[in-house]
Length: 442
Image (cartoon, rainbow, N blue to C red; front, side, top):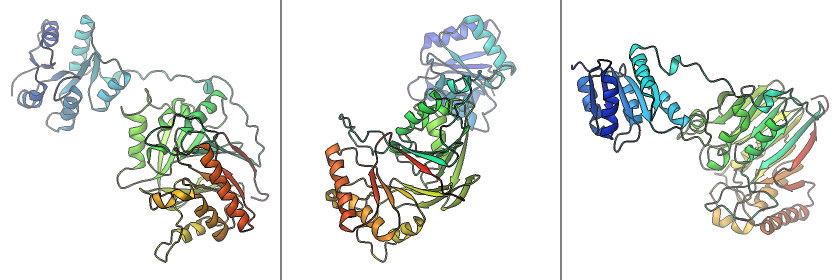
């Protein structure tokens, strides 16, 4: 095996030779390589003590080289410095995640470059030896938290987003809002959030700006379709170290909740430029009942919707609310389609139901078996199969105009009137609030 101290890999021959000349004064044995596709062959043959690699190279990138070295049992002891003109913090984070010892930004200071290389070779400099950055203090941490205006026996339900995604984002404004799924339930001491669509962004801004009082925040994800998770990385409390965020959801065979959190919050594919500073834990659940905090029960069952999708029932202060934003109630259920009966059983004792009503009746046949309910299907189901007295119709298709949604609401009221039912029915709107009172002796 050749006695090689440093292999410099850069597709720019002039840059590679410059780095070599800078380091030769320190008596290292050094070679350069401009074809990154040959890198692993040379590294395996010569086993250098240190590889210094550029990132942006045709073929095999510097990140590919670093990841491959550190995942190979025969090569993983080789030290790696990733060097690039990229100044993004996320690139430094990626290098660290892939196992690099250090990251140097071009153009580098020559004396400091020599010191850094020497220290990495000596084992005295690495990501692990760098002190962590001081936490950024947000408005929430800078002052005393705001006391909730809710009474001990009150809770507030707020719609932050209730629309679906469309292949083409509508340019029109809407009285019902354009943000995607997010609903919060707030008590004097706690907040429980259902889904992390774009609606969660405004909620997060409000929590931080108003210096809200709760430390623990629960976020229940129904499934991993984009419109239900796209806002998660922009939820501001994630970047305040004074919060604890509890993510809850069911795994899918293609994607786990933990994978989703990792990609959305901690990878270079995150929409946010930095990683969370709040404590984040992941709670992967099954169809079951859980006491997520004293006196608060959360029950989950699978919903009739593509991918592993759940609907939630939360019971607190003697009241039960069900959130089922993606759920297809069958129009004419057969003996082999027991979903309607299963759902009716799950809804037993529910005070308020938030349910998928994405489709106007005339569109149901066109979209049948895609996991969404029509207005009349869900309203008639609630009247015929449950004792629910308050229904919030949710998730209207993004393509629908306000006039169409108004007509859907009229259809719902027509169903209720024709059957003489006593149901309070709403069409979900952004910023819509419902103040609820807990039941006595709860």
